[in-house]
Length: 382
Ligand SMILES: [Ca+2]
Image 1 (cartoon, rainbow, N blue to C red):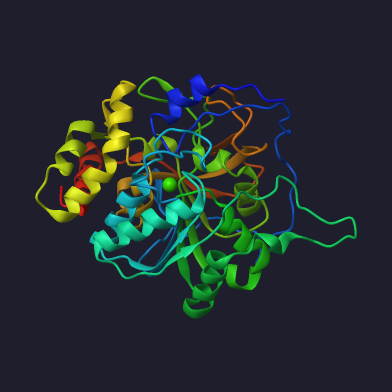
Image 2 (image 1 turned 180 degrees about the horizontal axis):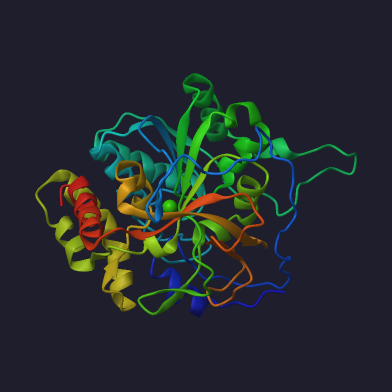
């Protein structure tokens, strides 16, 4: 059954919040996943590199990184993998700019569906790369989420490998070459999960996944009084379940409580468009459709959610992080309204029955928060 909730969908997606979205709905939500499956590689482990005070900062360090991203800044419609008429989010491109500005060793941009369809997203990702003067490879990844359950044929053929694409093969190749890189997952985790399931030997070389997912146990999430959901999770709930429950890859979740901080006032984004600086102008001009949509919906500012993931590699000491367990309630992708609590991914130290990962929920000081916002603007010459 399908009931259209385009009013609600528009209200929230219009916010352009790639991170959080509304949906149409259908019944049938699975129970919370509690199954424990064998890790695909290595032994179960915890994030235990070191702890400092009340905040937990596993060693991130420098080194090669790959951005797994739904980079859509510049699209004027086609939000939520093309099903919504609203403007897709702009934050992935700002995250890329931040990585370039701080000279992270980015080995590639793997583009996934999410904020919009993958092929239009390839166009905007390549445009962002050109504007930034970067020469990193931009490789196409997933064009759809993973099936909700593993698929087989009536003849018994296992279809797990059918998710493999150029982006997944690229990541596997880079892992073989580097034998240690960090994946910054700022889109749905589809390609990362596919990599883990099909290239376990290569995935064992993932130093850490830093992902824009999750929240404290809270539903619904709110942004300036509007209900929102964890977009990267709800676009492919099984992908996150695979990464967290079937692997022991070190994992840091940049939670909503952190990524929604330090929003940039809409006027500040408008000023970018008027800048004589080519990079600032490009980012400002490409952001205007979303800025207009946000303004129409009463939003005063725009959090640059994905940039918080990149900042975690640059200034991890500025983030408040803890060891936590997780609680995933899975379901079909993109069928939940923001007000539903059927599909959720929560991180909390109270969850002790799962493997322990890292979750970051805030800045250590107001000054650290202000420095992040300034860095994002500086990265685009704002
Ligand atoms: Ca994103």
